[in-house]
Length: 385
Image 1 (cartoon, rainbow, N blue to C red):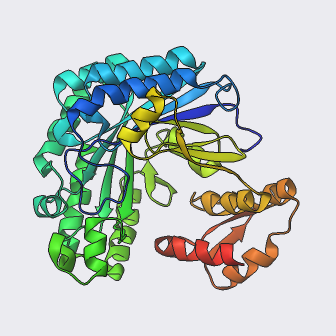
Image 2 (cartoon, helix red, strand yellow):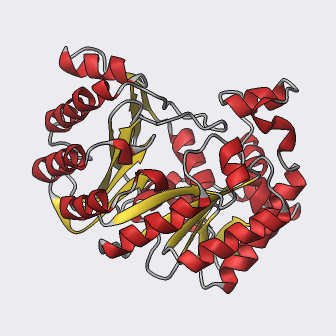
């Protein structure tokens, strides 16, 4: 936790989905709606049991309800969670409340109810504006649903909408990628996230690719070079549309950076509630059990709730400062970190600068702009020195 941190964020995990996307490696899935109500009650109970000690003693200035697909919950259930947070924690004067929502789940009634519950930011799961790509990935919505959802949100008074795309969806071509970017520019969300497709053995698609199979359109994934080209094209396109690139995967119009996600990259404190949710108080990280049924049982019977609880060593904290800080395009202030950790970083940074992977100027070090698509490789080399 940086010395300047005077507030905390709260993350609420809602692990329920309508279907499991082929590329998803999160601890989410399709569960019976009968679990929704007990799960919400368990989250509220966990919130109310949280002791008034750091970091929960700090005023809360961001709430992020993610998943999964939180928009599957009834608006009243979401309002119940947000109300519990407001009643149990001290709220800062300005509160950013984000809800992740899939386009096909958004109705005018839901959108209005979310606003009434205090939600003032929507993270819209778009991924692509090409129906063939969406279908191959197992997404439920189609391109036309995105515009309908955005219009409903605007009519309800939402003035802070984030939308995301994935570079490297199966069947994606330079032409379909360009069309997705143009459609996104037309919608003009205040915030945009662009992710590179990850090939992970924990996802259906990733496992198929790694085994050399053809299911889930595994043979139709663009090459790594094509994905990198799409990312670089998006950087140029979004800059021309007035978006500021402030983190490897994130762009925003002026004044609309994600305040909650910035806490992660700046190592500010945050509390997580729900199955699989993570928390951090500046020195310690802990997480809840991932299975929602096990989570509900642990809450109801006051059983073992955490499946991880670690106090960071000074070296681990320093490593986090480096790779999380370098995700931000403005980079990190070397002298401040060296002073805080009583260390000399030049031996670690100089070789990477010599390779053109990092750049330093005016006391700050950042990823070289041309190396953003291989950031994970850069971080691996940095942490191995």
